[in-house]
Figure (tube, rainbow, N blue to C red):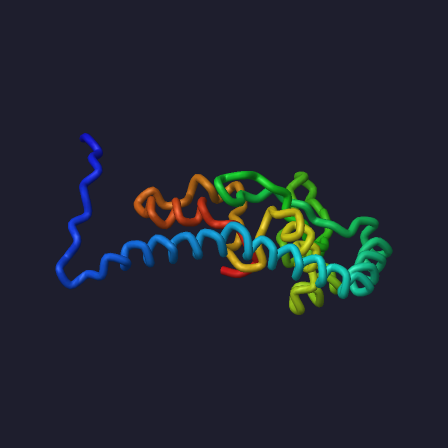
Length: 171
């Protein structure tokens, strides 16, 4: 199959500047996506990290005293399939059964972890990911690597859209 460029025929009722307006709109959208959205992410994430630093410090100390560790770091897939390390506060223990397998989540969730999850405080460190550019404040949740092979091949447009979008904190 040859790909050919076909000339656009102007319709009699079409203003000759409509296509120019459309191109400018596309440029504006691209500029928002590439520049302003990133600038907003940087400013908001930095401001929130600064404002919430006493709370983050308190939670870090509480988790350190309770578990001797405070961050949970997990590889995730971001924009253009780039792998990054998602940072969260650790809410579960690493308890194993006799066979060496991790216990079910409900058995490993700590009381402080339950509280942090119910208030979404465990996700505060993701602001570091936003500041670094791994994620955006708005965007699809980044997939766990183990789910990547399960993305539906029957929906290539949706899958491509998700690959081209910056991972974020919203779905």
